[in-house]
Image (tube, rainbow, N blue to C red; front, side, top):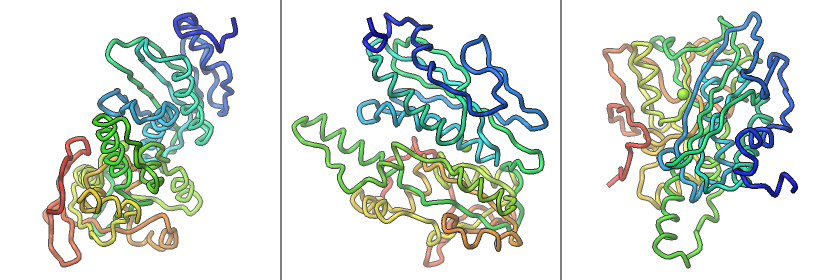
Length: 348
Ligand SMILES: [Mg+2]
């Protein structure tokens, strides 16, 4: 029997791992040993090792009803390496641990791995090990990402200073709106499976939700132009939570200006359909995987011509608090609000 025609149980755990990883070629000279031994062996001579881990659970972080396996694999890698970029580090290896129910077919797991491998190729990362197990309660994907950094280049949340400019990459809120769209169509489908999902014309928000891209390009831009952010974080839980993380760690306040917060036009149109204020989706949505950083005013000249970076406010003394300032000059206190607790907030 051809290996392609076998089921997962026929392959067995070790057969499955071999099947999924046999075509992996190591890209980084620092990955001395990858998959195939008891542990990976990594060489970080002279560099600092930056490590992060993230777990995705079916029903909590993803819904297999509308998440293609390949996208899920890609996004699982992205959400991890985005955290390394947020430290101004370069991702080098990932370790993938997976638990899945016996209902899944070999093809589905292959598709998941196709997404994982595509992200590894796009961001020059080695899949260097992991574990697989069966689950009785749905799928779980846990990824640990390792990367390298130089002591003088790493950027922490704690380095923001008064008068530093607050900058953000790309645009915000679209991934959250993409999720609202998928949830709406899922609900309609469950009530009436005859009705075809209405997803045309929403490519951008769907891509932002299903296949987000981490900002490797910005980290490269920083290196090429010698930009040194004073603090940085990636936006996984919404702008509001993330700027508060920077301010808490840096012991500062902040002012954000609503009219400068970038929102994509398609996202704005969809927000109107859902009766959500676009800026609320940007502040309290999530999963944008953009970078939020602060720089001293003297560094502004280095970033001002980059169209992917917008200045949205500045750092203040802690006593001044944390505010969003609307176009009519109203001060609104910022609140930490992860996207999973955010529901039904409208501009009514
Ligand atoms: Mg993060």
